[in-house]
Image (tube, rainbow, N blue to C red; front, side):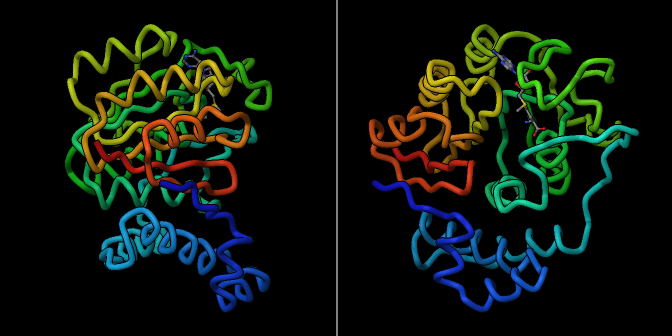
Length: 247
Ligand SMILES: C[S@@+](CC[C@H](N)C(=O)[O-])C[C@H]1O[C@@H](n2cnc3c(N)ncnc32)[C@H](O)[C@@H]1O
C-alpha cells in the first residue's frame, strides 16, 4: 500500500530521454513514460503494456471523435495535454468497463474523453452527475454559456446517462440502481467532506480490480485517507489520483 508520485518530475528522473524530448516541446513521450510507469506501479512490473501503448497511439493519431466547439475559451484541468487526461482515456480503453460514474461534468471535457473510449470499446455506459447548469468553480465561468456537457457531440451520447442534481443525492441512487461499478471518477465538489463522502459511498460498489480516479487530490487529505484506510495501491499525477481496488 503506497501512493506513488507519478508527477512529471518523478517520471523525468526515471526517464531522462523522455524528459529531454519534453524540454524540446514533445510532451507525448513524457506523458507516455508517466503512464507506462503508472501501469507498472498499479498492476506490477510484469503488466502487459501493449494495450496501454495502443491506447496512447490512438491519442497520438488523433483518432477521437471531435467535441462540439464554441467560441469561448474552455478551461479544463483534465485535458488531453496532461498525463492525467490521457490516463483517464487509457484506463477505459484497457479495462473495458461495463459502467463508469463521474461526478462533475461542467463543459463535458472529461465526459467527452471517456465517451470516446467507451465508443471505441463498443461497450459500457458512463453515468455523469452535475448540478443543473450550475458551476461552483468560478474558473469555469458558466454564466451565459450553453448547457452542462455541451461539448459532447450527438454521436457519443448513446453510451451516456447525464443526471442533473446533487451528487449527495444522485450518487447513492445510481449506485443502487446499477449494483456494481468498474470505474469511479470524482471531479465535483473538492471539499474534504464531499470527496470523502463520494469515495466512501462508491467504494463498496467498485469491483475488485476496478479503479477509483479523482481530480484535485492535492487539495486535501481525503484521497490519501481513503487509500490508507482501504490499504490500496495508488498513485498521484500532478493533481489527479488513481487507486486500484482490491477487496
Ligand atoms: C471541475 S468542474 C468538472 C470538470 C469536468 N470534469 C471536466 O473535465 O471538464 C466541477 C463541476 O462539479 C459540479 N459540482 C459541484 N458540486 C457538486 C455536487 N454537489 N453535485 C454534483 N455536481 C457538483 C459543478 O457544477 C462543476 O460543473
